[in-house]
Length: 353
Image (cartoon, rainbow, N blue to C red; front, side, top):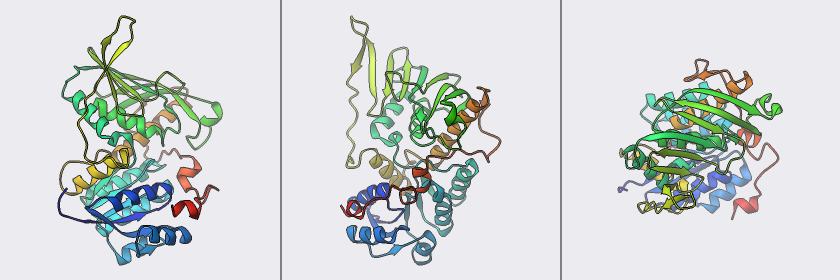
């Protein structure tokens, strides 16, 4: 952390946006200078809660007055593309967004390209890939501490494969340091396959990776819920917590869990959102890359789209990258449009607490 105090705008200040606001208010090297939210009453309440006077109903009004150093875009997915591109074109140094990054693949491409063309640091959001223990386990896998990777599985790939499923794909790509290049999938229930959204969709199948491995994908329940990577010596298991590491078996045939002895991390107030924000700020400082990027979210969306495409075409193999960038997979309405538009608004009392 250097002496710079970054000026932050929170764009979209619903429940998740308020988590970002809490974090950026806490850190000594950031200050919130503006809040953007379409809900007038909530916007005013949150301005008072976070001691912010510059309050705006939309991004365009913000950027006419202020170009922040950091834009934390936490709107519903439908509105992310326009906000990201507007901030990039205005000269914002660093932009972060949430999952899923888009519904249409070409919209995700447009965001990634707009930031890359202007050297804007484009970070992803609140994903467990940004947990410091997940990053450390990945680093130890990459350096060969546990031996060569021999296999990998994904468990629990279902429900919302473009939303929560971002978690699985992002950890899979990180642990294996590879990309998904071919997908064979089948899905259930039939009614979910016929919808535009991923709500309730369960995917089983396989991902072929660019390192030559084939990853089995389980959407139906198994004893695990995350990503398993194994070598000749060890199993590294991410199951929605700091990864567990196993080596060998006891006399009953059960795997022996090791103390992973993870390094201490100086920031821990906001779970894995901490790693996301702190690595993002370090990247804006010129030190490394965000632990989850906008490009990572784009890749996760592409895998989800390809998986549903294969499942709806009788498990035909689908090769990535997808040639048709107009393909889309919509998240459930709450993620796409937000709580205000889908009958699940946050109460003012909750927003003020």
